[in-house]
Length: 284
Image 1 (tube, rainbow, N blue to C red):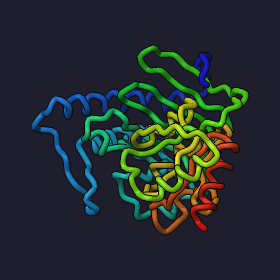
Image 2: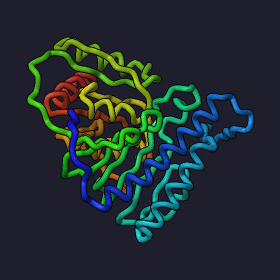
Image 3: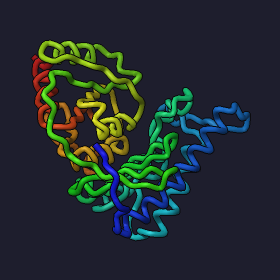
Image 4: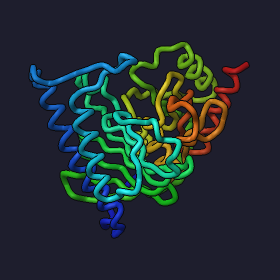
């Protein structure tokens, strides 16, 4: 859970927060424009036919420019940017300026801004912002994360709680989790646990995990590195994590492809163990 605390005195955190709060305001304004059915709102499609909107591009440009001002020596690997030189970067920012474009277009306010700092494959610092709620989760992977409530200008920090004696597992699923694998996984978990399913879009599920509302988040359909790095870093900072279906922790900007394989995100070692057991039975 998160409990009230004083504002951190870390200058880097404060600089990043200033950027992300402004980006939150930008995206929320764009969302209101879209929801008002403004005919001037622009939507395009990439080569893979996935949508990209003026909101994605405006937020991307804003964050790129802002990061250039505070960390000019660090390149940015963005969903909306040029990725050709990425293997020359030992250290870089990984950015998705609007994770959940499809949720945005369906007028579901479950979209996020994902930003993480990567060095030699490892996530060092992570941010997930929820513009519709004007909330920012951020912190270093080796420290307990913070939660900033933008409207109240107040800070909270994560505090670990003793595990509850419960046989219930809260399972996080995407709105598009209809493949047979999700049904099989859920049925296997249900043999030993009471299952509560929570459906949510984009990296917003990672925020729900930080809040204790989701224990386990399986993913059997594709994502990209900018979809998972920030969530993985924040989960690791509270004693959870994210592993591929092969059991290995994800590392970033080191593979030939930016596409991720399936994964299992977990809040605790207990939920990880339950998830791995189900995956092992699926593989038989």
